[in-house]
Length: 364
Image 1 (cartoon, one colour):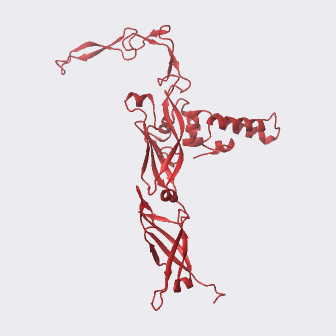
Image 2 (cartoon, helix red, strand yellow; image 1 turned 120 degrees about the vertical axis):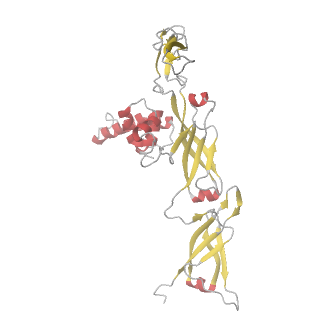
Image 3 (cartoon, one colour; image 1 turned 45 degrees about the vertical axis):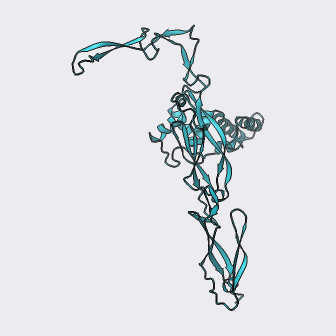
């Protein structure tokens, strides 16, 4: 996510409108050229003002969150009336496939279908092992309250009317059609049908473009939701938040009501991961001394992801020949792997690859 504008205002990307306004006012007072004559303050004031101009409007803020500065620049070039999804299609084609981020980018790619929002939630392996609660920010669409989702502001129906342009005030549309009894015949007849623009009244209310939603009929709504990740979940598992998707006039008219917010889990790729998961088993490494490799040991060998110390006992038995642990050899600890999803007390195994630390040259 591009966060330059948030950094300029010294706020987090999840900041509320009130927090944005407070931060802007504070910085504007500090950096205004009339109060601070330093040469660099004029440019800083312009940057702060531009950042607030974008983030203070819900629609342009959503565009910035999804596409960064490129989205704002394209919005200005392609038309301020575009919604974020229309802008996405205009920028990247009908598939809406961003070359770097997929369809939008918040915590991952975002897709919309029949009112439902599907997004990627990236979690660490430790979160999948222990289970966790997270707060996620989503942007959903709701009907504009000023125009009731029509995109137009209508005057009083009793006072301001004008003839319907589609039917010229007659209330019906005339068109030529083939005779029903002879569909293959060239004979045609005039058929009158009710005008759909005015519903047969012959006049329509005078209206103007809704400024709040720029005639789109919908507005983005930022929501912060609590999500519980259960123990043992894995990449590809879905968390469905009922009724937290888009709630636009179209979805309501289709009888669907509000859609769902669907979060698809993706395990975070960690460059220095201590544990590696394969199914319900975990793989890790531990280092022991040469003496421990030869004569055995009984100690806490490593710390697990829940903070527990994993004690391993491998001692030489009197009068028994025991093989010396070799570098790269694997110890198996039963029941210390990943918990199974929805059966957290059933766990896989933990595989520990042993590294043997050799004495230094000075010791020899």
